[in-house]
Length: 322
Ligand SMILES: NC(=O)c1ccc[n+]([C@@H]2O[C@H](COP(=O)([O-])OP(=O)(O)OC[C@H]3O[C@@H](n4cnc5c(N)ncnc54)[C@H](OP(=O)(O)O)[C@@H]3O)[C@@H](O)[C@H]2O)c1
Ligand SMILES: *[C@@H]1O[C@H](CO)[C@@H](O)[C@H](O)[C@H]1NC(C)=O
Ligand SMILES: *[C@@H]1O[C@H](CO)[C@@H](O)[C@H](O)[C@H]1NC(C)=O
Ligand SMILES: *[C@@H]1O[C@H](CO)[C@@H](O)[C@H](O)[C@H]1NC(C)=O
Image (cartoon, rainbow, N blue to C red; front, side, top):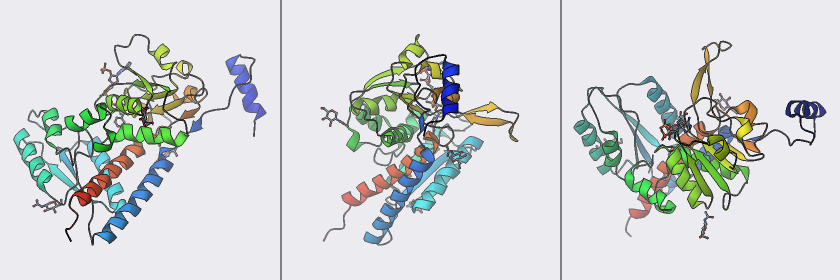
């Protein structure tokens, strides 16, 4: 169906004489993550049936008591419970030392009933703790956040089958698949190069055979780089920074951003927006993820996926001998 009202509005606002394409298709993380979690629930049920009572185990290690961390952790624990994953929240006090965190990690590494271990970042301790050291102390076989050097190294070399892929970029990839747009041979642009979003996203797109440009705070011509993207993934932490006018017409836009901005019309006085200016971007993109309800729920679903996968690998390695 074609709405004449929308068309005339478009023609006026764009000032162009050609017939413009319609607004972007919304790629729903709410819906896709629900499907993933439902599939995982079934897989866990099968595992439990086959290996009497076996359950995948996940530990979320937290140091301190940050409000945002508490919220993220409760979301993860709820998702795990729904799927049938045995999840445990290990909370260490703010006074915990680096050595104590390491001791806890070592003991969980050796615990056969735990298949996934994540350390909630940032660490909230009164002591100085080397985050990189902590991240790398997690056994690569249980590193379901995919943040250790071993897993990151495998991903950067294209060894995707034998590593854990970080959850946010993995979720972005799943959303890109949902669009039906093939990645091979396309020009992909990633904005941001952090360890949890941008850098692994670059690797994933590269090894899915896209040609990838990665931009960051020192990129001088960001709008121009972005305009070349058939597939654009943004993770910068700057509210609504990427404008619709920058985009290639008909491209795929994946927005990882979670930013709180003031909004007096809301009871809370604020609302959540992405790193992409949605209202202008959806006039130009072919596909776009909303915020909230896009990448956010996919991140949690992918953590569950990695945990179930880790448990499956554990079972394969430890098949009872006949
Ligand atoms: N949906 C989820 O579950 C999820 C998970 C993680 C993060 N996030 C969100 O994703 C966003 C990024 O998170 P992050 O942890 O990757 O952030 P980060 O560690 O702060 O990294 C931001 C990246 O963006 C680059 N950047 C910053 N300002 C820029 C600018 N003006 N132009 C171009 N590049 C710029 C930085 O460049 P330099 O390297 O040069 O400094 C850096 O590489 C945030 O909004 C965060 O809330 C969402
Ligand atoms: C192993 O982990 C499970 C689940 O977190 C816990 O109940 C159990 O006490 C742990 N075992 C040891 C030996 O620490
Ligand atoms: C990428 O290209 C390589 C080399 O042609 C091919 O072997 C591989 O299957 C492709 N990967 C994907 C995910 O399409
Ligand atoms: C996705 O679900 C969240 C939480 O239930 C809700 O706030 C959001 O509006 C939903 N987004 C979309 C696009 O459906």
